[in-house]
Image (cartoon, rainbow, N blue to C red; front, side):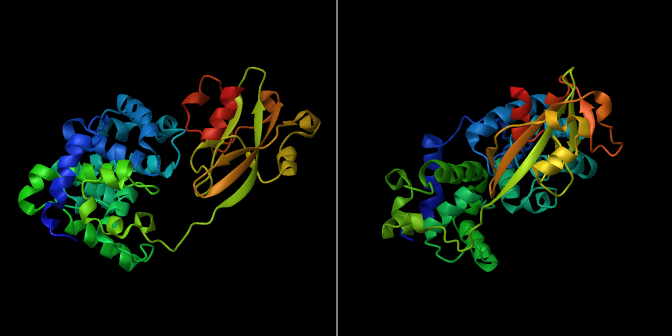
Length: 351
């Protein structure tokens, strides 16, 4: 690093105040509930997508107590379409733990926050620094990129020991202790904003970066080399057949998906591994009436799903409700409020 090391955090803070994101809906009041909710929603999801979900969520559940008191079905229903549904389940569990063990209030330090369901080290640090000015570093994907480039950290971050060393590097860049109360919230937001707006994975805007002169990756002219990660996730693909059974009144047969597994805990059309298995689940007299539409692609983070939909109309008595919750009729007025996988919701909405 250069001679201006001591000014690194100050320059990030100044840049954030002038050029960073300061109008996001969860930034007002430094409310830990809203910061926590936004941090969970923003995992693997872009800001533009999260904004609408965030607004609907806080309108329905304005605080920890209301979220804890809600049913999981209500939470999943409101989350439906945002993906990564384990986040919603952990969100609900965390709210209940906050009410049960902390009187509905968020702990003010990152170490205690990490003991709560679904809150990892970086999320805990975000809450503690943004809301309570704790001098602690975050290291989400965007900040990891900034820190590795600025410090020239070229060790493989897929290795646990190296990941810990990168945390140490991030901690070394924090504002000085005497500036923590004044600067930590804006510094933390500034690091996130730099990663999202300037220090992007491809073609970073180094000329617009407030710490360009201290950035080892920029000085070397190869910022896209960082962070170094040898372990690549392999994509896979899977074909799934969905059985869409409806009555003449528009009721739809839905069941809750088991955990673990694809779309765990969500309500879904019956799912099969082959067209023959789907047809075998239909009464013999109605199999010829099943209309199977051409497959369409639904992309998950690490898997491509090729979805085939077989649709048939049957009398209500042709399907037997399961006491275990694996299958039941749901009216057209009720299924929109359920937690449904995004492609299943689209299928039903299109009719």
